[in-house]
Image: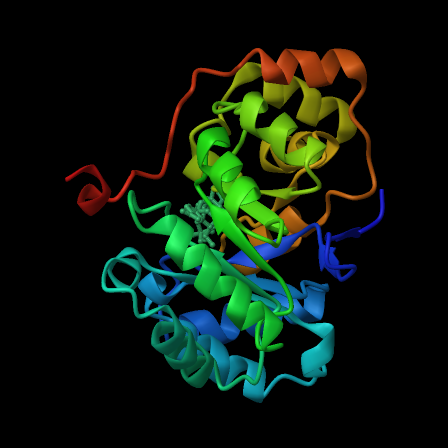
Length: 272
Ligand SMILES: NC(=O)c1ccc[n+]([C@@H]2O[C@H](COP(=O)([O-])OP(=O)(O)OC[C@H]3O[C@@H](n4cnc5c(N)ncnc54)[C@H](OP(=O)(O)O)[C@@H]3O)[C@@H](O)[C@H]2O)c1
């Protein structure tokens, strides 16, 4: 399997990236970034709501790898969508990152009554060249349908929670049929499936860890992964998922673990 996947913009996106949710600005972020880059990570996933875009920007500024070889994703938060200040929220993200462009800009959550207007504003940002690709996150089929119907750009990515305990195959298939890459958020379910016997047995067979088997399973579903870690041993472990292959029976056995378990919560303000 190639280590990158082509987006509908023609750009290549790494299938593996480092998620930065709950990674603190300062030594935690800069040291995880440095280690990850040395291990071959090129994609870094942040969001304005993670409050670490400035820390990521600092790490990028002192990174020996050229900017164009990195793939930086950030996301627009819900309140900016509500007040309709998409362009200024985006400019502030770019400033904090210290970048002239991001590789991918996502609508973090489909705020009811707002996300279509937000999408139109993202289309303008894309046309300006300051986001090489635009996409969505946590979108269901009906919300994507609306964008496909009214927008003029097909989202490049839908970042959704996807792992062996939450096999959202309806939306995964819909995205893949429409040329939208699925990027799995919380691909380790924040640790929730790592003790499962099925994974332990398969991991033993391949001399891998349950985390590696879970991440590999997601890759073989045609999705990308952005596991988070701030530990060097785990960063390395999570990156070594391209040199073994699960067979069909193993894929099915892992899929059977599904319990529609969501490890990341829906923000309260979306439910109001
Ligand atoms: N768009 C969205 O709404 C959304 C929602 C959730 C997540 N995300 C994105 O997806 C990324 C990943 O999701 P996540 O951070 O929620 O959860 P995750 O990647 O599923 O799990 C991270 C947790 O697992 C631990 N861990 C990492 N590697 C491990 C390993 N090999 N073995 C055992 N434990 C391990 C980490 O601890 P240590 O750091 O101590 O290693 C951390 O506590 C986020 O950082 C964010 O970028 C997006």
